[in-house]
Length: 478
Ligand SMILES: NC(=O)C1=CN([C@@H]2O[C@H](COP(=O)(O)OP(=O)(O)OC[C@H]3O[C@@H](n4cnc5c(N)ncnc54)[C@H](OP(=O)(O)O)[C@@H]3O)[C@@H](O)[C@H]2O)C=CC1
Ligand SMILES: O=C1O[C@H](COP(=O)(O)O)[C@@H](O)[C@H](O)[C@H]1O
Image (tube, rainbow, N blue to C red):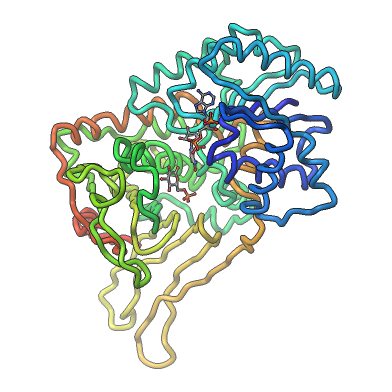
């Protein structure tokens, strides 16, 4: 296999892709013969490039670098100075790929990874085709990074362009939340624990809450983020993918080969929120100055590169209804925000609570099943325990944490799947298109000022209005 990495001098390659490849290599999960060709406009010799890869491994690999096999691994890397907008570059790239394949006896399987700005995707995929890089004897696959369009129209245009060179089966749209180990093992986890399966009964569930809260702010990405906001950056992709995955596995427990079709069914059943009703079901917010872990932080509008009058959302919460027999009458609440009080991605299933008016059951509260996805991985069940004396109950947690130290990283698992040709944990085009279709009226509501932007203090749990969203249904965020 030849791994052809567009954007090899970029941030993602350094922080995620090189370490992922290295850890796959340590685990013997890369093909017996392979080469990696890194591309970027800046000039670099093979040796300089290999030195940069080594530096990235030392800084970001989850496992420390082992000298015994480092040189062998680095020797797989070649660098090619390449400008995606120059036609001749592709002819030279083809020559290099073929030379490597012939000299090293590598089967003509080609994995193209586009770790570049979306504006380059069209020219790259078109030129791969017109220069014959896609006319190989083995398989060819394309991995493409987010963002996949900025609304339904641009996503369709992008997909149309990709499809000129790659079939749907050959396109692997990365959503790194689908690579998180807990998300990947949700299905088997429930299969392995019939007790969980029996708990996840429609008759018992009150609501499902999905949270992805972050401590970080906009960091150095204002250029992109101030146009995208939480809705495009996190909701259209990661949160809706988590909704599909949770809605799919919790009550139904399907086998893997039906996963994508069933996910499409779920997102098709997501009840649209018309723009006129958006204010009833959606809360958007923007962080103001505050404190995180006793350290003062600036507000969003003061961040470098952000417009001082920006109306961009850094927080999003919504109440969703899934018109699917498995989820009738069970609301899903989702929320995500930057500069919140903690880093946590979790799915909480709240069970129906028996409000027994009895002095014998004082202090009970709803049972919860919490699936923590990151930063730690755990399953917790909250039950009510009676105190030693009197009739008072108090909630206690039964907690099972997996040792997440040295767990494979999302990019590692996803790269491995792409190499094997398993698209289960990549977003199918229909999932992406339907997600954008669901998002579209909300974007219109934003544009027409139909949704207020609520300020929230950095370091808090988000705007108060988001609490109100659940209080209306006699629920609260967990
Ligand atoms: N960084 C991250 O954590 C994440 C990134 N992504 C996505 O991954 C992609 C890459 O992001 P990131 O690595 O951060 O971006 P960077 O800006 O750090 O890197 C961009 C890369 O593109 C190359 N490049 C730019 N113009 C050209 C050109 N004309 N021809 C050839 N190569 C070119 C640059 O190389 P050079 O300047 O040498 O030409 C560089 O290697 C983006 O789509 C981003 O949205 C998604 C999730 C997370
Ligand atoms: O895709 C993105 O995800 C990160 C959050 O990822 P996580 O794995 O740390 O939960 C987010 O910070 C970023 O804005 C977004 O582009």
